[in-house]
Length: 212
Image: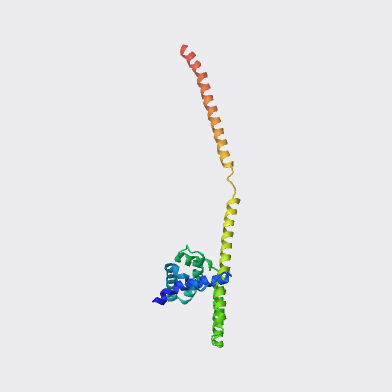
């Protein structure tokens, strides 16, 4: 149980360590244990990922593998964004991995092949294989992250351009009804004037007829 509890914090510490090396920053052994400073978040990420993957593996093997690939960037995301929650990091990893799961699967197969070949060197080649493969995974995250941010900014700019290019509402719709209203008002005024004039001309005729 203790080993299972420590997997999440250690995974977060390893992600911090290998990201520092890939970014040419100062990596230290202390970074391997930085995950314990965010113990609750890293443990929650490990438990949620394990739960989702195992449930899908029980249903079918392929969906479980796809889920494992989709959630593979979770710890890297937690390193870069310490304010994000474990569940949101998993969701973001799934979004970022859209269209890149096959690339990561090929990368994992390459890593597996390198580990297999290192057996012929009695494990000595692992001294080079382990750092190279982990840095390759960190570089893969950097590339996916850059493409994700670029697409996000492009979609935002596209929405802004669409809103700018939308035609402004024309005044014709408002002008036509007002013009018609004016015509109706003029006609109504004319009819009222005509009826008033008729009444005025008819009154003396009625008076003369009554006198006669």
